[in-house]
Figure (cartoon, rainbow, N blue to C red):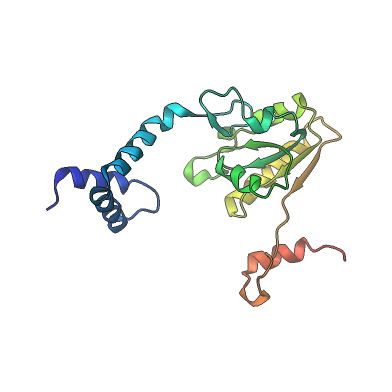
Length: 202
């Protein structure tokens, strides 16, 4: 029914997560109808994606292919004795936007999920243990997602880090609880449970 080139574009866009058939059709038709420069710009950026981006060998954050290590690690103003552990590289950008954290990061590369074949040995946990000793890390902040997989990963990290021969190492977690501006009646049970568990003194 559709020209092959248009159908191929729809099929390719449909491979993206969260993009269903109708959305893929709208995207493809938009690219066809719009200025050809938009499509060419998209093609150019996609062609350079794999060659222009790589993982930092220390933190496993996303960096330019021309960089040796992440600027957030090599920056002398960042505190290497504090490491905040996240699941994915994009989590770093969300935390950096707060401008409230001045330490370094470590990306695990996912969360433990046996169903998906992701076990502890497939995450960058060993590299984290090496960094703790090499950089004389005094605090590890676990910032995994509040999901079943994230919680399982956090518990495993806590256990493994407690077994390291680093007596002064402090392991903490990001606080869980009620976000500002949310009424109690609208909060889910998991959030309310976390808020009760992490209550603070006044």
